[in-house]
Image 1 (cartoon, helix red, strand yellow):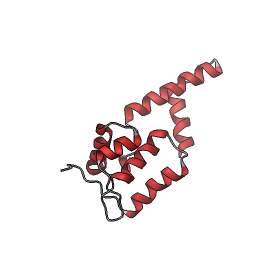
Image 2: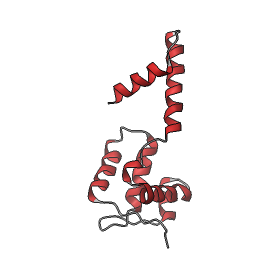
Image 3: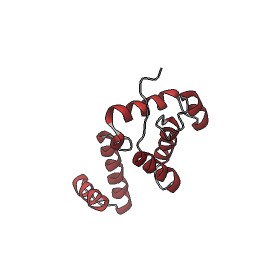
Image 4: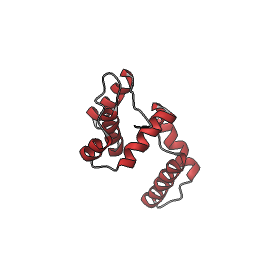
Amino acid sequence: MKQYIVELTSEERYQLQQIVTKGNTIGYRIKYAHILLKADQGKDGLGWSDPKITEAFECNVSTVYRLRKRLVEDGFSTLFSLPDNIQVCIIKAVVRSLRELHKQEVSLRNCKQFLYCKSA
C-alpha cells in the first residue's frame, strides 16, 4: 500500500494541465506535472501505479515517491519552488555571467535587487 496518496483538487489538476499544455517552463516542471496528473487517485484522476509512471516518463521510482511525499507533506504550492540554496546558486551564476559579459564589476546585491524587481 502506498504511503503518500495523491488526490488533486480540480484547481490543482487545472494548474498542472496548464503547465503541461503551455509547455513554456523548465522541463522538470512539465515532467513533474505529468507524473502528478497520472498519479492522481482522486475522483477524476487516472491513478497510475508507480512502475507504470516510471516506465512512461523514464524516471526513477524514487522521483515519483519524492513527488508524492512533497505534495502530501508540504502542499501543492511548494511543488515547483526552488530551495533557497539553489536560488542563491542561480543568482551567483547570473552575477558571474554579467561580469564576464560587461567586463565590469557587478555586485551580488545589485543583481539580486534587479532579479527580484524584474520577477515581481
